[in-house]
Image (cartoon, rainbow, N blue to C red; front, side, top):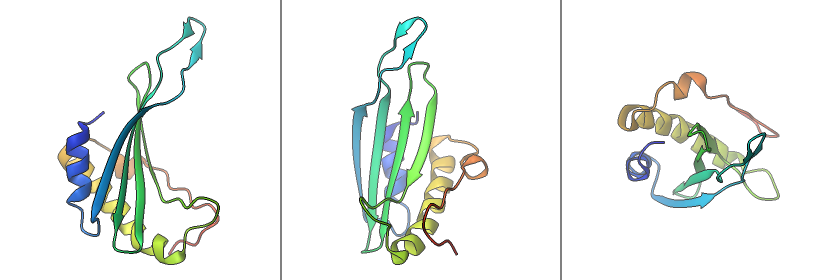
Amino acid sequence: MPEPTRVRVAISATPGVDDVEYRASEGGRPLTLTGIKPPDQVHTFSYRGGSNVHGIIQFTVDYKQTVDYSQYLLRMGRRPPQAWIDATHPVMLEIEQRLEATCGLTNLQSEVVEDWIGVKHK
């Protein structure tokens, strides 16, 4: 897990991003053969830019210290407007480049799997 302050700075420095909010929370407590494990630690960065850039990045750290990276564009209850999709996707890619360059993360762009569920992608 990269230092949250560095992640926030990398996201904030990305063209198209005007505001970043950070929140740390606890996730589920996995049940294993050896018992209930400590809860996942969830680090959420919400970012916005102008009227059309809206994204969320999450790093989830489990009891084994395995880190899962996710980046989303969601709108509760309905599909995001196409203008949001068109504006946010290039910002997402730029953020991944910046996280690789400034936070010591590797292979984000080569290993991230994009899911386009119910929306159009150019």
